[in-house]
Length: 172
View 1 (tube, rainbow, N blue to C red):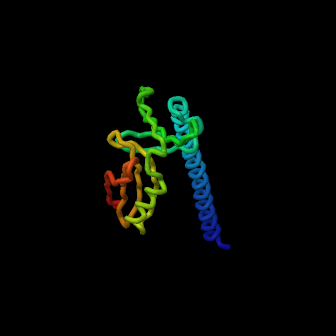
View 2 (cartoon, rainbow, N blue to C red):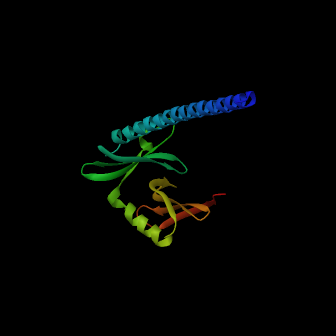
View 3 (cartoon, one colour):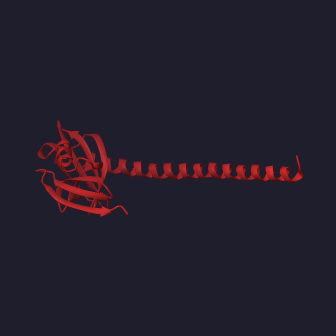
């Protein structure tokens, strides 16, 4: 082995080692920040879910999720007094009990019915999620989906299932 090959091999080994160490550091940092952010999100979600239990008919939480519209809400789905409810807790400073609202699931169109309605209109679309929410002080179902190069936000009235609003954006 010549001296030139020896140094060439050492340089390649050094570069590969530095790249491997850099990648390991990047993975560790990404994991740390991801789990730190996720932990904060989960803690905040638990706080708003507990507020829903304390200030609505819900006694047992079945699910919780976010609705982002004019106002951001934690929506808590749960059971109380043998009935199923959606409770809407706005994410805001100085939250007051009057800010929290709820609706009986039986007073509206089901998620499955909204999904069926949507699928009739958009059979080849990619559904992202369906979430109950509040828009213009009305309870709605928000359906978010992709079709070709557009992202759609379509809302249906909770009480009747009628199309209420629709907006789309180019993904480009």
